[in-house]
Structure formats: structure tokens, C-alpha cells
Amino acid sequence: MSIPHKPAATEAQLHELIANRWSPRSFDVSHKLSDDQIHSLLEAARWSPSSMNAQPWRFLVGLRGDSNFAALVSSLKENNLEWAPNASAIVLVAATGEKVSNIEIFDAGLAVSALITQAQSMGLHTHQMGGFSKSKVKEVFSLPENVEPIVLIGVGKISEPSKLSQALLERELAPRSRKPLTELMLKGLN
Image (tube, rainbow, N blue to C red; front, side):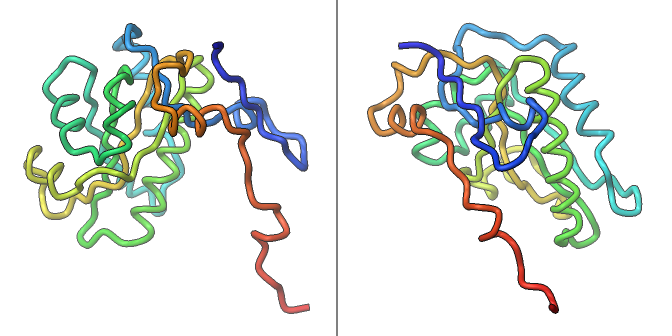
């Protein structure tokens, strides 16, 4: 079995970083991220667009083998527990504000987009996870009330997927798909 290459079947020409980005579950358990690589990912996120330049995103990095990584893994829900511990790192993305609103969450999403695009440019892959206990993360890391966990991101080198369970293997090898653009458009005033 080989490492899947799954470029998007697009309706318009896209930059290769966007067309080739996908979220694998088969990470190389022997790969380690360097400090420079982590710094580049976080620096890309830091320079994301931000409403009123508030920069409401916050990050916590766990590298496989350290206590942050173990604590983040302990917050994962079932399906993510099978594959996420093989990632080189897990990054917690949180939003902060007096009262975290949609705009802070939107800005944190922009930072995630920059981080994953930077990862792709570096030959790394990412997988965003909503399947984790936000309350456990808040408790374990003693996050302040005004810091809201949003997503976890597995980061690492892709590996061939044969070690995944049958159900996840099928998902890993399935072609990528998206709704047609026409289905995503809202009706205007014409």
C-alpha cells in the first residue's frame, strides 16, 4: 500500500497548496517536528487577518512524548484516539475575548487556515479535530474563563494508511468530495 495523493477535483484552477490539502489520519509515528517548523507554523497563524487587529487566537502545542501532548490526547473522543496519537504534534487553538463571539471564532479560523497552508507548504499534513472534550482541556490546562477551546490540529508527516482500522482505512482511501459550488451560493436580490 502506498501513501495516498488526493488532489481536489476542482471546477476552477486553484493554487496547488489548496488543491492538494486534505486531512489524513495516517501519520508517521517516527517523524518529529523541529522547533523551527513549529515556529514557522505559529508565525504563519500570527500574521492572519484579524478584525480590529485583536488577534484573539491562542495556541498550545503538544509534541508527541511531552506532557502537553499526553493531556491533549486524553481529551480526545473515540475515533480520534485511534490515529491522532501518531501525529508529531497536536496544537490546541483557542479564542479569547471579553465574551468570545463569532468574530473571535472566525478570526481563530483564519489563523488555522494560515497554519495549515504553511504546513502544506512545508511538506506536512494536518487534521483538524472537533472531537475532544473542551471542558477537560479547560480544566487540565487551567484556561481562564475568557479562553474558549475551538479545535485541535494534528500535525505531522503522512504515512501509508495500512495500520488504520478498516473503517478509517476506507475513509482515508476514499476520493475527496465537496458539494457543488452552486449548492453553496445564496440567492441574491435579482
